[in-house]
Image (cartoon, rainbow, N blue to C red; front, side, top):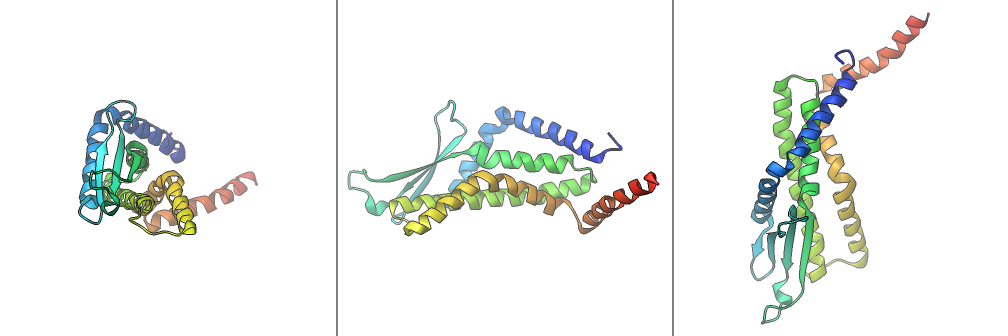
Length: 208
């Protein structure tokens, strides 16, 4: 496996990925609590213009979910009744799974640990920033359902498509992009390019 860096990377990645996945029962509750606390710090609001709060689901199958409760005070009745928008997020899929992918990619990369530690620091920071921004977009999008944000019919379609992309492909593609930017330098790409371009020549000479 030492002579096959690609195989070594795949095996190491699989081991790290599995280990981090299996750690969820241990750290899941703390991660969900931190996710809600950061969400409250950044987006929480309780004034005359809007009310946004983060709640945990009851214990059970959806215990790792987070509910963002969005209220437009202007539309509430004196008795407290009125339209309320509940944004339910799978905290594990939205925040933790992309982080697991990023961590496994960085830890499995065969580069000096000093560079891996630096990549972990900047990678985690960038990944969590992206998650917070994606969360903000989802809250903004759902706020349009109760009149906090004004969107045209076409604007709603575009926003919903963007939300679906965030919750689907982009939330998993972003860790890969961050891994590449945080982990590798220009000389690494040059070395890889040289390796790839040299292999056909070597095989050709060997065949002669």
